[in-house]
Amino acid sequence: MKTLRQAKIGDTVKVVKLHGEGAVKRRIMDMGITKGIDVHIQKVAPLGDPIEVTVRGYELSLRKADAEMIEWE
Image (cartoon, rainbow, N blue to C red; front, top):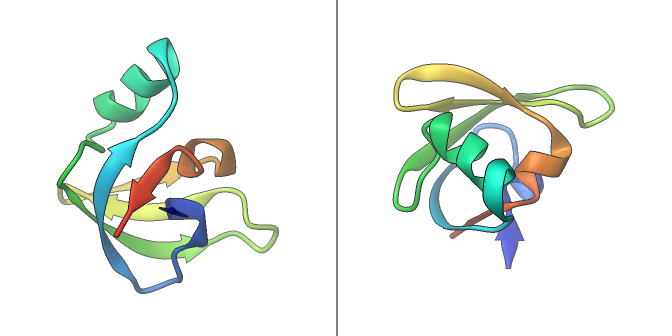
């Protein structure tokens, strides 16, 4: 299983599955990250938190904990 946290800068990955439950999973989906969508990794902060991605045409910053819940191929 590969999580979004493991993706490299410049990669474009396809979301396969969202882990987590309840409000956490709903918050990720409300940000536009759903199964089958492409996510492009823009930047990663020096200490690895947060990760800046482009999804559905806008830029989004994700915490490491949230990025761990997003599985990709």
